[in-house]
Length: 493
Image (cartoon, rainbow, N blue to C red):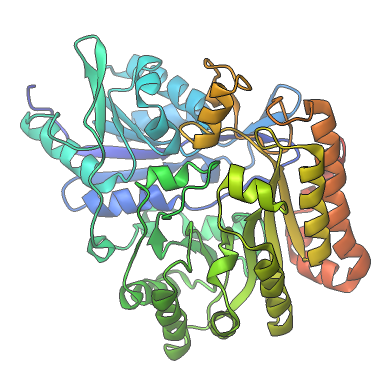
């Protein structure tokens, strides 16, 4: 392979397709920021978050969905202005991939010499399909920093591509995948994500973080760890990170938190970890360090917390360090479903005690539940709804099972004939409207069970604790009155 001229790269987070009843999250893409920080000393890097730059631009996609973010023509205009030699596309959601495909086509029409690369959960799970259905030149599978950096070096030098673990590309009319990606053994080797390349103040003004809830608009997402050692059947994130769990040292991470306060005036952080408290020893050191350094940062964990990793002592320390809310990743209120379908070590009795402890300490209680798993019965779904109601939690995310590419439950659904072997995973990422007959309940009935369950759980909080409810959501409704419209849309799902 001859050497390529490679002096400038553009990293793009594309627009998003979402349910009309959903919220338009606008979160600084830490993955792109980390990639940029890892390679910026060797090459000029520019970033483009199409969701941030075009958050107010919407386009209807069918009856139930919207696309929000910069339109293609605006993205291509930025490409023309910067003239990158390589463009890297992040694709976390499967529903984003058609947008990536379309952008790649337009980039190649603009200049066929521009090298195009994609990474993220969807292309990592389906590398062959992703390359066969697009004009993408390369895919970076799983953790991207090492492979992406080595790809840049190989393209510049004309070196061999087949020696880069985790890289996929076309070869001899087929697709070649270089095996498993190499994981960074010590995460402290990573520089802090290059958030300064983004318009951070604009994220603060929009203030639409993950799960929408914040107490300060000056909030940013952070990750203390990568991955999760458990193998929950519905989750592709644990596969993406190689079934490994790694944390940064508490000292190094605390330094990053201090830099967020100094550089951006950050007042709140959002832990995006898949399993923040799995390593309880390191978690304790982290939270104690937040107290000792007097960071005065408030925080929550909108991506979910494993309830079996929590106890009263740890919760007290989390509260002291600034925690105001935890969303427990419970998934099901039926023990058989947890053990045999989800395969998650949730003890429902212990979880109930954790919720009581959180309430006593003064940490707001949230929870995640899923219904509609492969083979799940009406009775098991009702068990989940009834368990959620019995917890008397402050907020509940009850969603419908959606098969994600590469996951054990997606494969099981195909093996059992509940999902077509040719199913297009790009038509997923919608957790509010069922299109599948995967459980024992037909889709129309499943939607009714979901709607009834969601509102019975969440409106129970309003009925029992009206003042607490309005205090909790007052700031969000004041800054985003469109949530009222979303509310009425959701009633019609």
